[in-house]
Image (cartoon, rainbow, N blue to C red; front, side, top):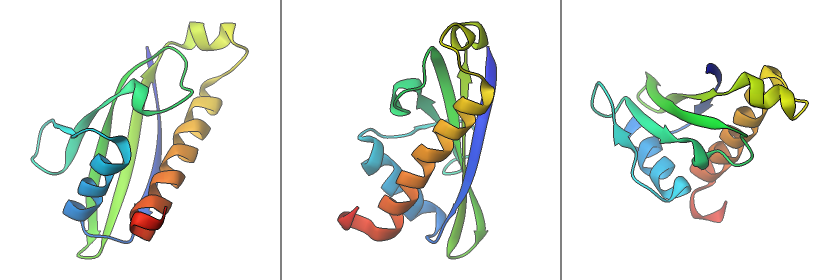
Length: 111
């Protein structure tokens, strides 16, 4: 298994960003490590990621009103290659998913 990741910044405090992540994904983030900072992510939360295993999402405060969100996903590179895809594709897919989350989080219920 290998890992791909993408990062974005959300114009919300950490706890609100995490709450909106849970609403966006439809399930509570399972804490891992430092409370409120990281959570496990089920691979099926990232649509279209073939043969993904699991991942981690990190919520890091940039300042009081901004959160840096990093999503890491473990995947099977052999299975990916059989689909004609590579690690760049996985990172782009994660980035697209985080972009959707950013719109949802910052626009609230309208997204």
